[in-house]
Length: 112
Ligand code: AMP
Ligand code: ZN
Image (cartoon, rainbow, N blue to C red):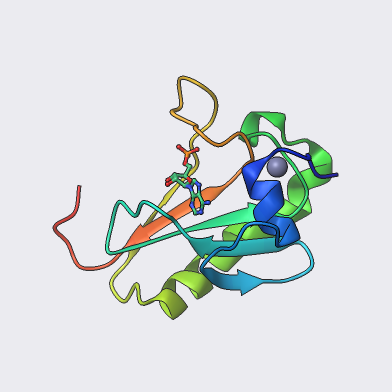
């Protein structure tokens, strides 16, 4: 299921452009519009999951697939020496976009 007004659902539907790094039937990954590191991209499920706290056991395979993609996509994006993986969840977790996403940050330090 997708939500009409959700910005990441719109990206998944191709209604809002993104700088795509990967796409398959289940997920899409694209560069963050306000990068916090030399390399900063997001991996999202194409169907709407509000946050990690809203994921259910039915999402386990999808979540595993997303986590599994991280090192491959990080390497392709140029993270040659490691990366940071972040999932902000809910208000106190600093989540601004209420559609589950994995941040992948990397590139030469110093950053943050
Ligand atoms: P979070 O605070 O974890 O919800 O992070 C949301 C992230 O989405 C932020 O880093 C934003 O810069 C990023 N973002 C918001 N809108 C877009 C967009 N249209 N394309 C790419 N990244 C976006
Ligand atoms: Zn959504």
